[in-house]
Image (cartoon, rainbow, N blue to C red; front, side):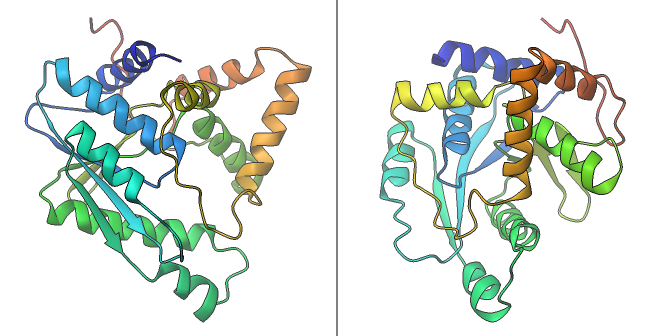
Length: 244
């Protein structure tokens, strides 16, 4: 996927769900993975021509794993002229050494989000951009069906009352395969996750299942995504079509 296609899909999401307003300061959560770096490129490109002018910053919550080298991310942010902040934490130590969690993902996500939210507030940001793409949204829906018994997926835009922050997901229309293509084409400086349970989660199970279903029923993935968009899911904002 080329940059122009990425920017087109990003603007579609931003427009249809009114994600960015004039004067916003958006913090991009950078994990070091392909998704968050693609999002960084997307919002950096959008910032150049979007009619609502906004500021952009980048934040990484360092979980405390050894050998987690962020030099390449620092260089990328310098190249793009985006302020970059690294928040040091002991999350990995708490999860694996103190609590000895066997299923750490939910607690880890909660702690990471808390650290990210606090850093964003300290920097004067009013919005945080998460790098969830189309496949993430579909996988979350399946996981909610299977393990919670409800039709749900996270919203394109969510206001956090307690923090007075708005979470946005600007690459929600981008396929994961296109993110991989973008990573390869633009040689994104991906920093591999040091998490010992990476790739062994329920989300990986959902990802594998969707792949199997798509092979057996071509087009089923897109139909699931359409069902989510049209599903009147609780908490989702109104979708504004034909905005341009």
